[in-house]
Image 1 (cartoon, rainbow, N blue to C red):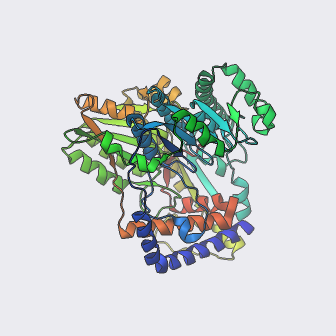
Image 2: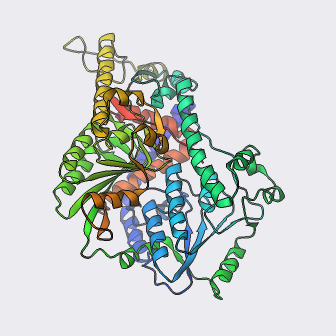
Length: 591
């Protein structure tokens, strides 16, 4: 009951905050304009400058369109971060600019999924081939942060800092007990024993099938990282495995020093002195990633070159705007509009679909699939998978001519499910609200305040099975594989990019740059005679900014009021807004 009261309080606070945001918006806009005016300009570099690559928050695919810092206006703590596109551009420029001597890397508080860590790691590997150096310093390292830092020529940690080299964990919350306490009944319809997205609402503990798939993909991710780290440290993978069993994060400084994981334990202010020794300069001069990335066009001009469109498909796949989501979303009418425009644009010679999605609405996924299939008939369509291209994320990838994935991408999860919530118990037993129906026919409309009848249940299950069969057909057609072969690796099972390559779900392991290069070749464009252009373009309209501020405010308030119970509210919102049949995966990896 306390959880429910918290939800009610959060809802009222959210509405109240949304109201006052409207009155404060002109002030916000003014502050935003001032902030944008003072925003970093492109960098003017000098010999022996250093790229200061501070990644101190969650790494998203694309940057926010907000022109101001939300925390300046609200007082909420929001970690400063960089998007992946800005990071990659900054490294590209740092490699190309003769004035940049090296990179000073700091990733304190950075968070990302395995494939994003891997993409940046691999870019560092290419960067070092230029002969330039990387120095890394953190107060503390998470496993993913350490994976990046292992590429550094010099790897430092604070004198009393820690390295969380303790392996990987996947934590799955189960809500069955909560639903029982709230008297909420959720009727589940699914196909495939590995389709684990619905497990938290029907079980109290993990199924054997889900434990099997999670163990497999986590082991695969660990093997990729451990192999890379071992190569950089010149040690055996077996040694790293033994360290991971010794609770490295709890080691005292003198113990950590004996592991070989770090070069030295120093204070932060000493790092610049070490860098000055490398540059031979008397004064440290660093350039930020945002400023340096704005020099991209200078070093990689586009004049006279052919355009390869990179279309981002990031977030939940939803049927309509306003559906419950905490982050970016793929609304099918919106993305189809982009797809059709790129199809008609004669300047666009090929399209790379950059997918980072765990899926969502099966209906919306099918509509996007159709639009992409039409585009593929006109010009090359290549898919580049980021952290996720699972369930609906794989559905929309299926029509591609060629598919790239990172080794640590989570993909597949070819399966569907349906969830029908019944809140009548909550409404009647907890709140004292009763319901009476008047209908013209026996069945009537299914609402969230009654259970489905046996007839409705049978029809919904049949619909789920039909959608699954269609999903298999789309995958079989796209991969040029027999439907039975697809079915053997489907069933809702999640695969890493490495395993997906082995079973035929992807064509090649590589990042976004590899996909763009391949797309250019498919379009018959010579090396160096193309450039990537990114879509959708940022929407900085008044309406878009207002919506972004309001959504951000609601999320912050809910997090502040609910804490760990936030997921409970999120679940109820999802049930209320979601389409009846879903192609969705909820797998997450902590590192």
